[in-house]
Length: 320
Ligand SMILES: [Zn+2]
Image (cartoon, rainbow, N blue to C red):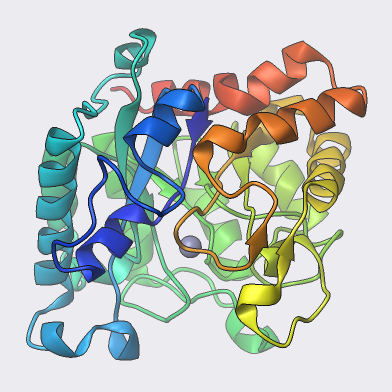
């Protein structure tokens, strides 16, 4: 299996050395990855900005925070004996591998040349935005005017430079206008690492049918996100009571499949970045979704594509 998104490194970074990737009470650790037969786990360096920056880190710039997160990633994968994937062929061995990704393009501070440093770190996927505007682009938004805004000039530059370096662009969190610009300017297939179908759950973080089809026609994938808010529109009073149910995941997967085909399916759990009552609480329990989809009549060949082959194909396309 390949999981295109988790926020475990960010959680470990926030714990100031108390939590570790080797073993923890989060959704992702070494044993859970091994038990779940996860060959490739994407670990996002989610770079917080503005009021999400913890009090004791306010003196650091976004790039300095990203560098700290990278140091945590290096230290933790070494300690947990999870090798970093540099080439897709690394995944052929039986053990879990760590795939490095980033979330929040503000980490560049507008300096496009820093993308080659990310390339040296082994970053495979670069997220243009989180939920804030940055030097590159605008985020998904309930404000139609913001939602329609395309990439900024530096955003177009970043997309072109990523294409040159062999880094895949992630459009999860991006504005719709930005999405269409990425489709226009990206030479490589691009991905929505952790987004669902807007037609099933009408939230701005999900993709419309038109976007799903365009993503598929560009050779990209959309990773199923297990976050309750993107799976259904029910409102829970407290975040921790919101339910992430397998039946809703199935509705999204079937819709994406019927709308955009089998080659766009993938998984991006968003583990350790989501809250709620999770029917699939950790990496070792993803087989429950597999079983539910199989029961709905999804063929093993399609499930294989969703579980790893599609993500593998996209990662391979960037090996230049
Ligand atoms: Zn995210």
